[in-house]
Image (cartoon, helix red, strand yellow):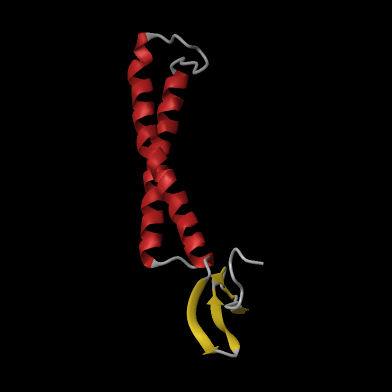
Length: 127
């Protein structure tokens, strides 16, 4: 699937905003682990407070980057796969109008002709 320039830039920014902070989180967790921090313990020694706050801060920066990357990719996929009614190809009283629905999903052109029949002789509420 090919992305537009704006989408590629948004995804690149999201990936950088996601990757760089989580590399910092990983490094901080490694240092704190070598110093004796066990993350499974509920009450940890006060010397690890700065490490825990730094990990939380970096994670709060990195998570929106992940959301930005994934939501941009999903929006582009939905936009590329949505069929669009483009034009009326013919209309006459004896034939029902036909519309051309064209959509592009994954690079495959899905052109289909759909006929809609108008029943003007039917009365609603009367049999």
